[in-house]
Image 1: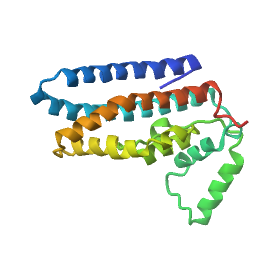
Image 2: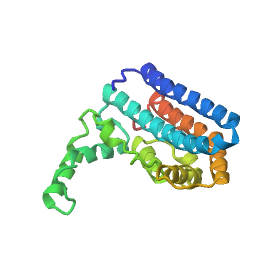
Image 3: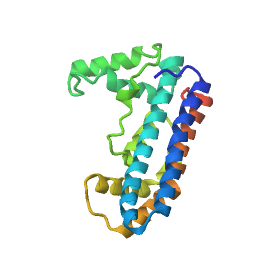
Image 4: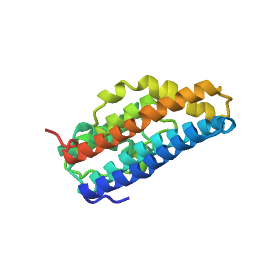
Length: 215
């Protein structure tokens, strides 16, 4: 993926969100208009699909942002420390042991000498949703990208106890009772799209305001 300008970054973020919002709307129509014997299946399918939009859009936004940073390629020395830290996982992923003196020497030399190197990472490797985008994984991605975590700190219980828990139960074929399914779907319908949009807005704001650079 190539993202060569702020305009292109916004277009990619917006276009990904548009089709997801359409599916949110369509699912709501299907659930509310379904017959009673259809509703249970639609609730299960809706929770699984809404979770997929959550994971999919977070991954997409993060990858688009990193692709943009790859293109403008600021120097690591100009960037906030999280981006230098991010590069370590690719640089030292093979044959590296923090207990080894040679590995310790290598990482120290890399940190001391990389300040003038241009930012370049593989977004597909760096951004890992673990196919299970619970709160601690979201928190890790926010830290990696240097984004504000304060709003998501209030969503830990919702993410782990509702969104991820019920999605996993459905994905594993558990028989979740109808009342729990309906209550969970209602919460997801009320809150999840707003959270997805919030993450997108954090990424766009970081790019527009050059928050990846040191003050």
